[in-house]
Image 1 (cartoon, rainbow, N blue to C red):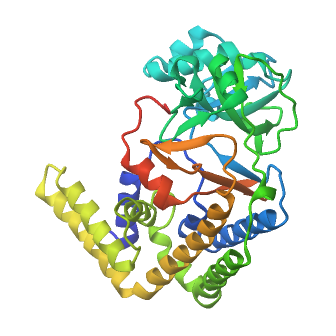
Image 2: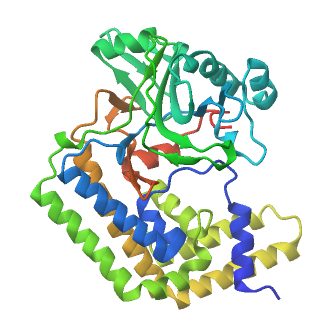
Image 3: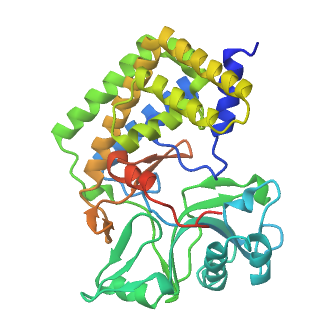
Length: 398
């Protein structure tokens, strides 16, 4: 008979995403990597708060832009030739594009991506330093820009519609492409390059490229004493759970952790339906996923096996309910602390205005880098829910 862990691993693998990995939500780190995740989350939030209090303007805290697709480009460290790529540049078998023909060969199954990569290949070389590899989010090609009657210029690369005004709008209207470069890669071999938020190379200027730096000026935001008190309260509550129950809850809940685990998919569900995460809710989530999987199976024997696995998981969670509830309470405190920081940073959203389906909103979020590892700070009730509920553009991130 298969063990509980076997069923858990098996079902996690079936539900695991095949898409390219994204930045981790800061509050999700303890759910994914236990004690190590909590430590990174706590220190990242503390570093971001300190950054805001000191009014810094560095690559340690940047605005997260809702661009698509991700573009890796620059001069190849081996050949010296200019190239563009999607994130597949770092695959075991990389897809590197030096010519339009390369793009057709590597990505011909995704015509939307082909068009964007060709635009990037033609125009990003106009701003690229003579050496270096970079990554950014493509914000628009020329045909994507809407010229508004009020003189502003708008573009919608993904969920958020961005609008530029004044002189910036004029630049956007003339540009052939727009990009936000957030990462520089360092190393002699593409496969071994290390990512860094510090862009040390200087980009050239070109009217054909709107190149938006992501660094956020925290000096303009007012981190009020009241907000600092609220932030500290939630941080202390999360730390208390970690100190009193951490080792136990991380060991107990580990079978459902990881990026593709049930805890991760359950949290996304609670964002969609605006519910509070609980152990009971997680149990129902597992049963619902299992039932959906059973409905697709062709034999009763396999369906029964799937059902037994789900029931074993539910029984395990019920037996260890306190551990799961404590982990999810910690998650909520970290999320609440994060939301205080996001609210503070949103006081100065930058030079662009933001809308989702015509409704004014804030930036997607922010990115804090701790020990050279970035983590995203996003108000999930505002942005992530809209992003999860929308129908994504075809071929956007292939």
